[in-house]
Length: 332
Image (tube, rainbow, N blue to C red; front, side, top):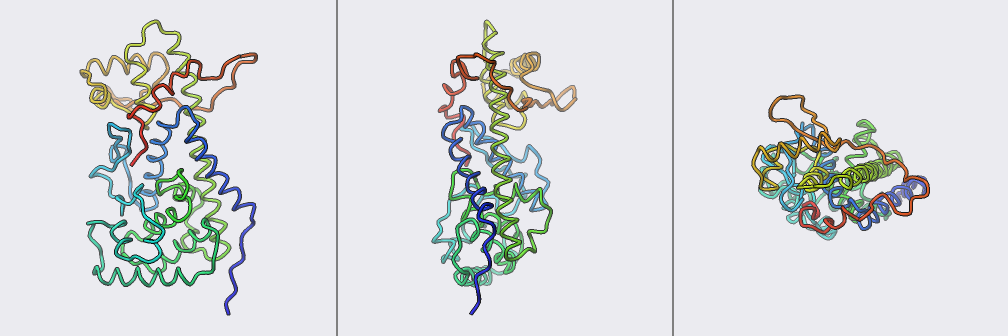
């Protein structure tokens, strides 16, 4: 009779789960939750691509008119259609065809489809034989079994992370599939061969690190929004500057062409707005080129509110009046 592997420190499990809960709470309450959600999706896709040994350029992803992060034809990450796509636990447990459809869709496989389905069935049987464990730990173990079985013949590392995420962090609203991948980026490659308690520790630490990275982004976005609100409040005429800022907050970078399309402006009008934002310190030009320039918001930790201030950093609530606008709906 085999004994159950020892549980890691319960404090580590509690810390990982608490970090996920913080994300869920901030996604309900944060005044910058819409652009933050889009940035989370960008970051997780980039983390999955990095682990998949794919150099994912900024223009390989796009944010559509509803604020959803989507993949372009230039994203070569394996099983990209599954990122952010729902899948039931019942499918993960016992539906090889459904799991393969979620992961691969119409993407070509290295091995024969029937062989792949049989390999997935063997993986599901191995998962069923695992001893009971809390969701975040069970996620690590079924992901490791997937890598050992390699049912798809290619891209099995990123597939294992997508499956582990849906079983663990994906049960909360703070991950679209790559939160654990984001945390694993900072710990080397030892997790790929780790087993037992060592894998548990690495996996929980990665969940916590990924969640804390997301929360840090939210803090920095709030700090930026605080500074931007002050600039906008001082201006006598805003024009469409606020729309440009909202657009830029949801993306790592923007161009005059993207702004022109989003706001239905001429190229000259978009460049004028971007130049104004740069002059006000709300955007920085980061390409250093005379043409095809790209701009990003300067994000840093927020400064505390002045002593004796009677209102918070979002006087007038100027961001949340746009918060439910379709431009910042949740990423796909």
